[in-house]
Image 1 (spheres, one colour):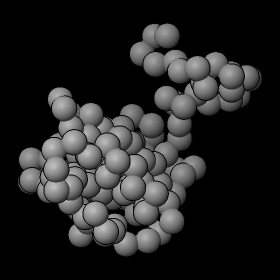
Image 2: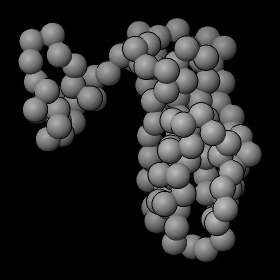
Image 3: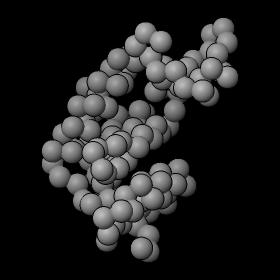
Length: 125
């Protein structure tokens, strides 16, 4: 609808003064997680609005290009929603890496689980 994607769960929460998932106010959350699909591959982007930082976790390892792209994308996302983006950073952290060519989606879900539990991003694989 317009510039917003409406999902089934958005329709169930439509109410006066209610926000759609696609319109969320980043300042209301300590962390926002996003599974990002690249052709044939998944990575995780985590936004920490209060800390003015983003974290990108690629199961195959992070390149400087992905960090730069994550920084640009997350700054644009929070800027559009009224947040100050000066001094915003994007980085990565030590994390387990996949040993095959098919498990990136599972790794992204495991990274998300670890972030929400505030646990280290390394695990046995």
